[in-house]
Image 1 (cartoon, rainbow, N blue to C red):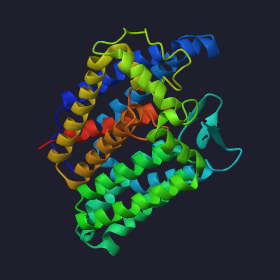
Image 2 (cartoon, rainbow, N blue to C red; image 1 turned 90 degrees about the vertical axis):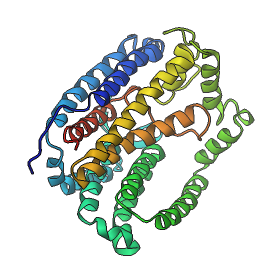
Image 3 (spheres, helix red, strand yellow; image 1 turned 90 degrees about the horizontal axis):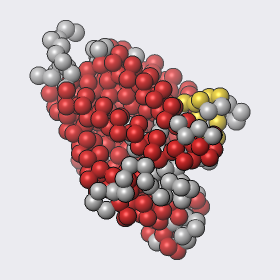
Length: 365
C-alpha cells in the first residue's frame, strides 16, 4: 500500500507531550513524601516515571514512523501471544500479586501487566477483522457475536485475576470500535442491557465489590472502610478551590489519601493546582480525543479509521472511569489516569499506541 505521508498531527503531539510533562511533575509532587518514607529517596517514583516515559517516547517515535497498516499483518499473532500471557499470569508462582490482583509478570519492582498489552492487541485485531468483514456486522449471529466472543474471552481471563478496571477499559474501547464499524444500534442496546445485568452479577458475587458500591452510595456509612478513599479524595479536591494550595503543598498526600501517585493523582492535581489546573488537564485530554477522532475520520481506509477510534477509546474510557471515581461519580476501582499517573509498562504501552495514532494522522485525507 502506497500513500502520501505528511507530518503527524501537531496538536495531537502537543496534547500528548503536555500531559506527559504534567504527569512527570505531578508524580513527583504526589509521591515524594511517601517515597522518602518507604524507600529513603524522594525521587524514587520520579526516576521510574522518567525511565518509562523515556522508553515510551522512543517507542512512540518508532510507531509514529512505521506505516500503521504494517500492524495488520501481525494482528492475529499479537492477539494469540496476549491471550497466552493472560493465561500464564494466572499460574501461582509465575503471576505476581499486587493490590489483591494476580495481574503482573516480572521480578521485584519491575513488572508488566499482560492486560495492558491485550488492550492494544485487541484493538488492532478488531480493526483488522471488522475492516475485512464490515458488511457482516448487520447480522447478529455471524457478524456481531464472533468479535464479541473474543472480547468476552479476554475480559473473562482478566476478571480471573481479578482486575475489573482493566477489563472495563478493554470492553469499553472494543465496543466503541464495534459500534464505529457499523453494528446495529438495536443489537448494541440489547447487549448493553445484558452487560449491565452481568456487571451487577459480578459485583454481587464479590463482597469487596459490594462494599465499594456501598461506599460509593454512602461513603460516610463506613468512613474508615469502604468509604475512606472517596472521602479522602473529596477532602483533597475541596480545599483546592480555584487556584489550589500550590504545587507541592498537598496535605492529603501525607498518608491520608491512598495511592496518591497512581489511582488518585487527579485529587492531588485539584488540591495543588485547583480548578484551573484540573480544567487545563481535562482540556488537554479533550484536545487529544478530538484530534484522535479527526485522524480516524480522515484516515484513508477503514482499518486505519477503526484503529484510531480504538486507541482514542482506550484513552477516553480510562479517563472517564478514573475521573469519575476520583470525584465520587463512580464506585472505586483500581485504574490509573493515562499519561499522568505513575506507571511502568502501562505508560510505555500507551505512548506506543499514541505513536500508532500519530502515524494514522500522517495519512489524513
